[in-house]
Length: 125
Image (cartoon, rainbow, N blue to C red):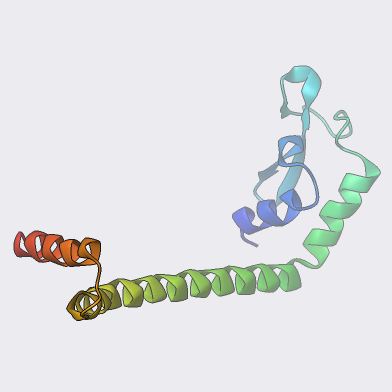
């Protein structure tokens, strides 16, 4: 069981300022002691039957929840990679589009100046 994933899964259901993971054990904080972990069980107001039920449910269903979490992470990474590739494609195509527009007989002076600036800046590298 990955403690970081366990903590993330629990934090989706219990406010993260109320607990801490020690190995595979969930320890609830004591707000009376500046949110230090409790000295003995059942002293924290956060150590409620509801929160314990959530912890038990997450641990019981950990494998399925972890798989879902990892799949979501992979999907988000793939989306970021795709967006990055699209930006790269767009950036590569801007030069040719700008040059094409600048060659048009009705191209405005601003676009022509941008083409000249781009040629000048490209020459520096």
